[in-house]
Length: 300
Image (spheres, rainbow, N blue to C red):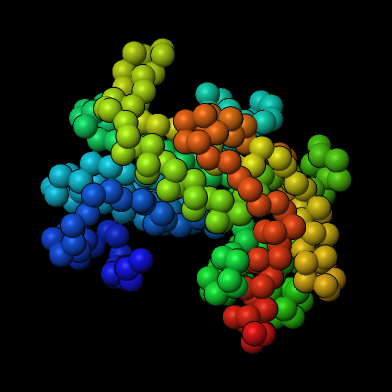
């Protein structure tokens, strides 16, 4: 393979982004950039709307100027809000319960409008469930600044001894053990889902699909998840086993915007992308811990 070019820029900086597009032959874009913490979005809604929406608008404008019309967008299962049932299909109602999820839904709508105005755009909206884990080498993983907002990075820091305990937000949900249930997906399975989506878009004729109700072209929309939900306590126990150490935790109040249970029906991704997850919760925890063990504790 080839070493990729790397540019660290604010996606809202249109001049810098334009320079990158001029410097490189770009055929497609995978748009990951955005703020992503539910609780933080409730406390700082304007920051989330300003960052996530403006970054996308600038990106699309620069792509259009350079006639690059293949885009994969990192959306989120938060667009479904509190679902009427689980597992969640792509045709479920869209009713996000927090600014993070609403920013994702707004971007989906913007990209839908872009596609409707010009069906030459090939767009995939990938609704992630809960990405966790790290590269199997232990060399690439998530290392948030400050106190992590998400479960696995926070739990990893507790296991490493740099944080005293894990806060579990709510143990009174209508779930088997009272803690929230989520569909955790290994980041490497997620990465492979993007490659599958890109290959699918490359092989498609525009328009990709049609809204059966409105009769208009719509982007490709798929869930990326395993189809199985795990509670927070189940994940804690799995991580303890992977790390070989206990995870002290405290029960805290529910966070605004959180819901009881969310896990995917991934059958559409199976069918359209020819993609399935292959890594289980044990691998997710083992790989996440390996990254922390190497990068934070200095193991080799």
